[in-house]
Length: 215
View 1 (tube, rainbow, N blue to C red):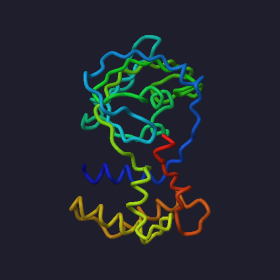
View 2 (cartoon, rainbow, N blue to C red):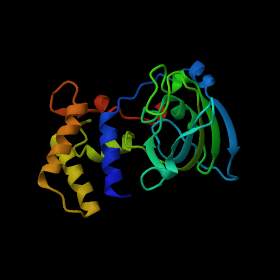
View 3 (cartoon, helix red, strand yellow):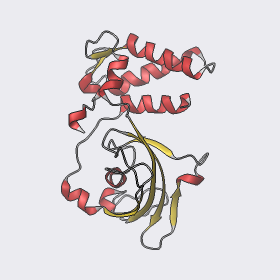
View 4 (cartoon, rainbow, N blue to C red):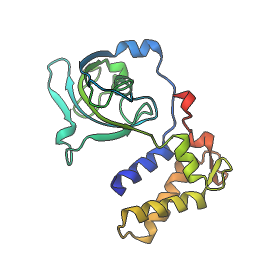
């Protein structure tokens, strides 16, 4: 995976606070139509997973397309952590329990999309329709394994030295030359967004680790 993606995921892993706000009532508001399911499915998506998907978005009132992941930037499927608010709540719900290779058509009400504020091409109180194709599911950056990888002394908290070491190793994997200030900037940003009690370390609570029995 290119470093640019790993860097984005790292910042997301340190900056997102997981909110368990999906009630059964909310889930019922998203209408799901399964268009295709692969014959073999050994893994289904769950909260905290890193998923790779294409999705096209339409306004329900006239089926005008407001987003197409295939035409955005380089057209690659989008990577994001499922269930943590990187996409609208309706998409987080719609992509749960989904097999790689599966396709769905979903209808998302305004309350689980952009509400009465709207966004860009999306007017206020708009019901949205998405056509989704899931490509891959993998371990997300908020996993217990990811935390333990950074926590070198196993003290259940991440120091600046440990995170700095992790960044250095990630830079090495990429092999690109970068300004010395970039390392410090990333490190500062991580602690600014996650060291909520300003004690100089990021605890497992602040990191908000996903344990397997919580998923």
